[in-house]
Image (cartoon, rainbow, N blue to C red; front, side, top):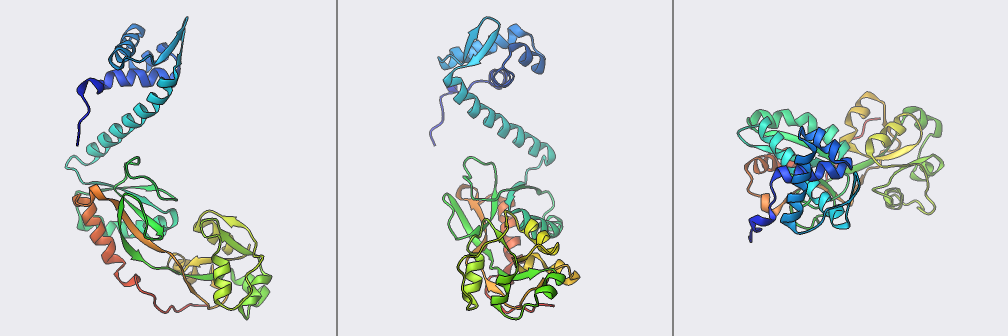
Length: 308
C-alpha cells in the first residue's frame, strides 16, 4: 500500500488546534479549551496552513470563518481524531489488545445477543466487546466496526458473511384483543388493526397471500423496531408479525399470544458480517466461531410449537 508523504501528515497538535478553532469559531475559545495561549493556537493554525499550502480560515478583524476548503478538511480531521481517541480508549480498557466492536440490530442485540455474551467472554478472557446499534448496512471503511449482525439478503459490499439463523414470524397480539375479535381464520385478521415494520413493508401481504387471503389495501400503524411493535401489540393496539425467537419470554408470560397458529418463514435471514481485511483478527475469529456454534440449530427451516 502506498504511504502518504510525511509532509502531508501534520502533527496532532496542529490538527487539534485547527479542529478546536473550527468547532468553536474562536481562537480565544480554542486556546482556553487546549490550555494554550491565543498566540500559540494562531501559530499552530498558520503552521498547518503553510504545511498544506491552503488557507483554512478567513480572518476578519477579531473573528475567523472557515474557507470552503477548511469546511471539507475539518470534517475529515474531526473523524480522524475521533478514531484515534476511540482506539486509545479501547487500548486503555484492554492493554493486551482484543477489543471487538460489533454493530447490532437493537432488538436482536438486546434480546438474543447480550444475554449470551457472558458465556462468550468467560470462554475468551482478555477480549473486550463494544456494541453499537446500526439499523442498516454501512461502509466498514468509514465506520470503525469489526463485525455486524445483518438481517436481509447475503449481500454486503466490501464484507464477508456467514449465515447465522433463519427466522419464523407469527401474528401475535394481546389475549384481550384475540378474545375480542375471536380470530378463526386468516381473513379474520383483516378486521383487526395490523401493525407494520418500516423495514418489512410487505410482510403482512406475504403472510396473507401465503394463507390464501386477499392482501390488497393492507394498512396500519408503522414502527421502526420490533421492540416498539411488540409493546404496541402487548398494549392491545393490534396484531404484529413478530419473530418467534425474539418474543419467547412474552409468549411464556402470556403478555403476547398467537392470534392464529400460522407461522411464516421470513424471506431474509440473519448473518454475521465482517470486513475482508479483518477476517484474520483473532478476537473476530473467536466471536465468529462462537456465534456460529450458538446458532448451529437455527439455519434450516423447522416446525414450531406455539403456545396459546
